[in-house]
Image 1 (tube, rainbow, N blue to C red):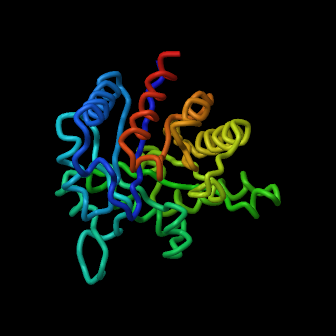
Image 2: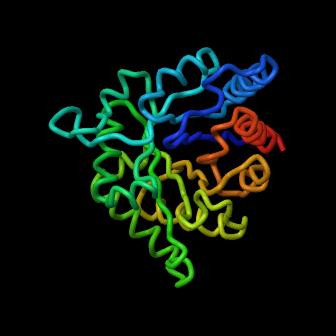
Image 3: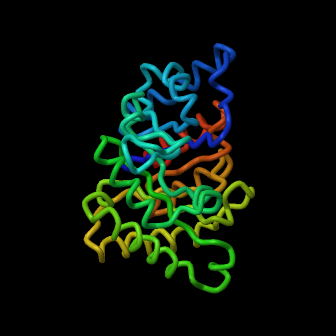
Length: 257
């Protein structure tokens, strides 16, 4: 039986299920999360940092883990606007996303910086979700695998093999994030296999590889059925209790297929 990791990234949004839901919808959400965790799947919700406590109340008793969308590489200091990994751990987080493509784009984060964040996260008891992926231009030039290997090497050089080995990788083709486009199953399989082989060549064994890129309730069965996909990093669809429940139910269904 396969065990999936499904991560909801709320980005800079307030999720719909932080507010009161109809009893039946809330019951479905809670029951789905609880069942998935009971069957060995890992469910993580990553709200913006100021909403972590709100989400903690929503998922209390379900077994759903709390994660953050980013962390600093230091535990304290003169870093205005940043949140340290130790602070996140104190809030109850056990996971953190590092290197999301939107932060690479908007905050100019480098592979070396992402590696430092991953190392600091793990030191503080947070499991890093390390994001890698290519742009549409890089894919069109046939550079996808080269880009993925370069990102892995850059992050690995900064954090070391043991940190990388204890992390989760999220493959997120940049061109499929927030666009409504999703890579084909062939493209997903090719990229995930390449990442798996690259990791093994570097002594990184059995690290889960999630797919992130416009994952929805409509395409989750197809994506999670891919051989080398260990789960999903879900963006916009994670804001709705119904949509996220459907994706988690898809994981349960695919695991038992």
